[in-house]
Image (tube, rainbow, N blue to C red; front, top):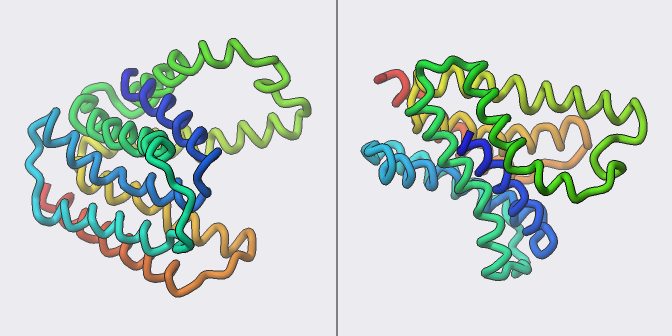
Length: 219
């Protein structure tokens, strides 16, 4: 529940940072979550930082840098810290799910994480008008339910079920597929062109995932 509460608050920092930073800049900062996962794993759970894990995490950060805009940006220290709350919370959550929920089961873990997020965000929602919370039309509500199932419930169940079995590093590397998946959806669904930097970044992620898979196989 604590992990869920922190990730809920972390997403608020992520959105708040978008007032100053571009989507690409915030997205790149989010890709630092593997380094936070390694840091929290070592500091809180005594997990040894291996050369393979550090290499894989570094490849993911490098992939984020490759697709970043190189026009000088608009980053400020405060905005960067706000944006980093989401990857820090996610890195901690990955460790909690991996190390502390083996006996709880996938559904119980996912439910506890969701409940923690609801508890943390409820006070903020209470201050909003109903029109800002409840969709005005049935179509919008159906879309939200569909997105909730496809992008939240199913992935969270998969994470909660398999993370304790494969370990922090493989779980973190698998989660990094978000970046190439985002590029692929942009290309297939929105006809956004893929540049050389995008393909290089996706390749780096795939190499990192492969490294993570070898760690899982050893487990």
